[in-house]
Length: 408
Image (cartoon, one colour):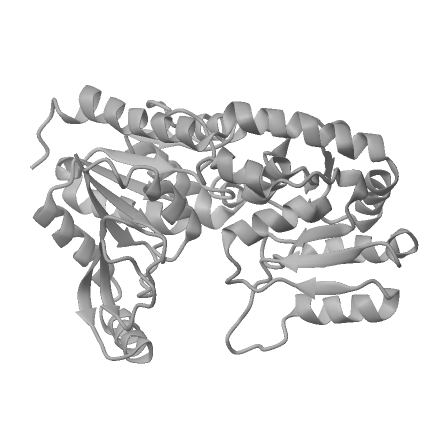
């Protein structure tokens, strides 16, 4: 089977998804939906089609790069900028040539606003010669962007043109149907894959959440993330935190031209105002270390105006941290509000403060939640089970749809 992915080549979510099937002996290809010349270090057994790329650090030897290699990333970036200016549709042309050359059995675009829209342009050109197309919905692709005038028509067009739809939330199944999708919907499970339960068990300590003294906060502050609201809510809880707890901020978004981000500035001011220690976890921290942080935390907090099932929430559940998450995600499909976690509005520090106070003062709540959440993780998020679901997913599509038709 030959599968062409159109997705973010630098994304851990792309890497985790592809890694589930990279040992099946299938021919896998990745066309970056954002042409940035980056290749995630955890990709395996795949050919990646950049336009121009510079030096690639730490990529696996089984990854084969295509495109024009240049001496440096800066030179490659300059070449890409030139082509975007002179030939605005050059990537669409490259995608068309690639499809005609490798003749994939399936095209799988992951995420709508880059990968899905790019695949749509390709299908408009190739028409019936475009291979069967799976569209996967990531966190905010429909739930948020579907409410914006700029994207409504495009989202409907993608859903009308694709052959299969997949997502990680029942909420997004309904949304796809509301936007007109009438085709087959593939099994619903987390886009990030499952957990290696043996590794998770090794990382577990004997310390119950009620005896832990760390609070983990997801540091996204952007068009969706609301880390600053979380910091404000924690500041309002300073009387409970000071002298007893430390805050750890992870996934803080950084910009190469802005050395001090708004979150970092707010974090420093938070500590000065409250006396509560706070550390920022580097963005290149290994996933195992992030899991360990959840395993040291009493609470794991994540707030955004839109998300699907946040991997951050699933990690907290796996490692025993009590999740407090914005209700604008699909967390409600995994945690029971008030029992195994707390769901809150993403932009109301007063309500978030009340939730934090409850979770800091109710030892029984957080300890019981840890047991129930880990049981659910073992039942539904075993990496081996999800991997087999993914393999079945592609085989089902191939055997019942692809193998019986000719597209070239």
